[in-house]
Amino acid sequence: METEGGKTFWGRSLEVITRIAAIASIGAVPLAIYFGFQSRIYPELTYLTNPVTTTVVDINQASRLKVLFDGKGINSDIRTAQVEIWNDGSRSIKDVDILQPISIKLSPGAPILEAKLNNTTRDVTQMRVDTNGGVNGSVRLNWKILEKGDAGTIQLIYASNEDQRIEVSGIIEGQHDVHETLYRDETKSSKSPGWTLLGSGILYTVMFVFDLKRFNRRRGISGDKKFTYEEPSPSAAERTKRRTRFMTFFHWALLIMGIFSLAAGALFFVLSRGPNLPIAF
Image: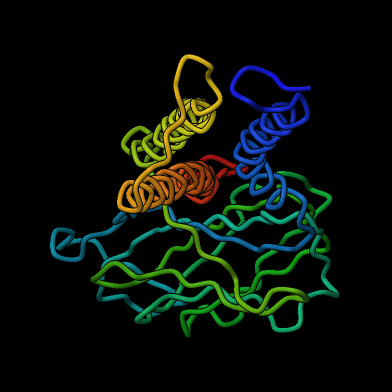
């Protein structure tokens, strides 16, 4: 059974099925990326340093103020900084999972006068700070269990005339390094690249669908009874063949660019998420 354009019913049905499958594959790519990231089971001990530090004592301005620590005078500024540590993974982290102690240290180095746990999400985590190595610019962090989203904020008071970088190191089972995330002001972060990629992917998809219809119409025009078939010359046949190859290349290039743009846009939004802080500074 033939339809208009000389195509059989099954041939036309196959083209429709192919079109639907192509569109469905484009939409499945970003979904596969998203659910692939969400389905992973892994620990991810993460920390974020508060970008704002406070100078408690400015030694150059407090001429009549004397600061003592363990009976000894301090001849430098006194500063405070905060760091938040939490489990951003999908697997809990127990104390037995700590293969190398979790240390919080200052770089390039300054004595830590005091380190205290300001806040925790749950008391059941039993998070605590060991300050034995504070004079050397390093303290240790321990806990009983950190499930997903469990966190604690630690305040450090140190003596230094310059800001210090806070570094957290250690090894836990399934994670060789503690992951540091940078503070990102969501009000200033731009999502334009992601929206541009998604918009381009949608545009390429629409162009692919319309080009598929146009391509199919041109392929079926020889079967139209209103036209008289004439044997084409060799040069005309070669031109037609080259044009057909170019149209086929352009047609599938639209599909590939659509899939790539949608996948890149979805990946951009997944990777550009700001830190989801369990405890606000």
